[in-house]
Image (cartoon, rainbow, N blue to C red; front, top):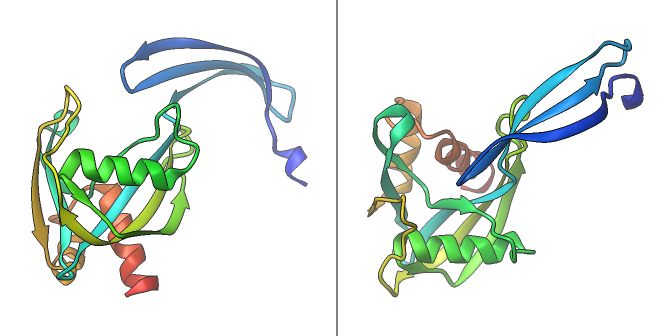
Length: 181
């Protein structure tokens, strides 16, 4: 049944590339035979971490986000790199690099496609437990991040009242509140 909805890819090229993503342009044929072009952002897989300290607080980050011109409160997250076969390894690395914290355990929560109409982004969500500050941050050249901790229930409330606007973080917090808490 899915075949009747599937598009056929006739060709593809990279229309634009920059650090962090590429724009792919594909020549496609729709199920009715119509041919055209379709562009999408190629990001690949990323991880989002909901890190709980040994005291039960959540490690959060505050980071400047240029597209929305403000400091964004969210969860540690990052793109899987070439050698990352296991998202858990990427989650541990991103947590350590962005926050200086390391976790005792990582439990997979959810994998989702946040905007599959215009990007191939896939987010792998993890709860990290037993987090303790063990090192200094090791940020990428284009990251400016402040680390803090927050009570989980206050994070749920900040999603509810709209003060936490980061979609990746909101989904991770809501998923955990709904299914794990």
